[in-house]
Image 1 (cartoon, rainbow, N blue to C red):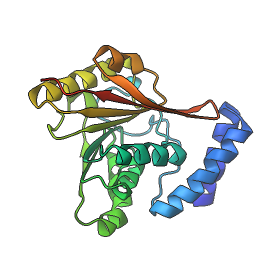
Image 2 (tube, rainbow, N blue to C red; image 1 turned 90 degrees about the horizontal axis):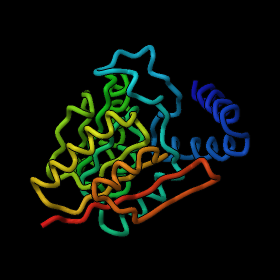
Image 3 (tube, rainbow, N blue to C red; image 1 turned 60 degrees about the horizontal axis):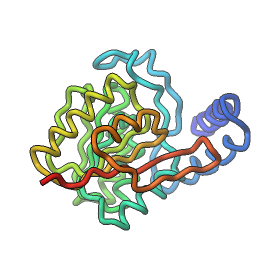
Length: 225
């Protein structure tokens, strides 16, 4: 079954982008899945999954590149920005699992698919055993309706939804930052709507790009006194 997932993923990337990118991605998929002990390699267009909210606002389910994740979390670890991460559109829990290995104290994922949330919880079972002091939480909810905890300092996005939902989510983030002023970071993989964050007062502090199509940025919102 795992080999079939890799096989399908390889051809998905090869057909939509190119073979070189497909080989690079699958190599890191195999290494990452084994290293973190999870099962998250799969493409899902979500059409057959019951969800909270409107499916038209969502993008497909696809795990973020392990290459990007490890580089991103190394950077955050280096600036001590690894306390509480909230992954919007957490899917099967890949980001949640990797974040635990990079020292986050609290790790929260939110997804509008109950099935994907259950997959995330299942994937986190061995991770919880390895990091028993880490607080994990997987929430089945609509991202635009979910209030942001006032201790969350890192927000993760892998282009999970369109501009309509992103605007609502950014509004919730800003509300939390106004209530409890703190330095906050946004990790944005495939940053299609980055301008929304820039207009909201975030500044880009890091950019990572590999083979043109694998892209991510880290944005920071300074403390407002």
